[in-house]
Image (tube, rainbow, N blue to C red):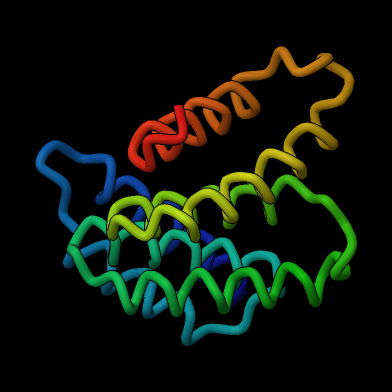
Length: 150
């Protein structure tokens, strides 16, 4: 029952984030409440990832970084350290976005590169023609441009 309530809070928070204008305070409150409930590891990691998204939008970069690190730690616990999983890739992408937003371009490059490696593995069936792969390549291009690598 608590896991279902946590999942509902997570989804309601996502709606608050997506609203125009977004209601980030309300979303953060719901996500924090959800984290206080019993839930599975993957669900907790997804909620932390969403809380990081809210923190990034609020300009709370330290909090976002902490939440992403916790989410990644949970996913590694769930899938193993060597597994290239779509959820790990999503955290790496978000870490890249956070680093880029803070103009930490080397870190952004590392995170996006790790994300790309995982996404290429996950979406190998599409021979690289997948939106997730393309969006990661785009972000790597933005980092390269910002670093004058091009």
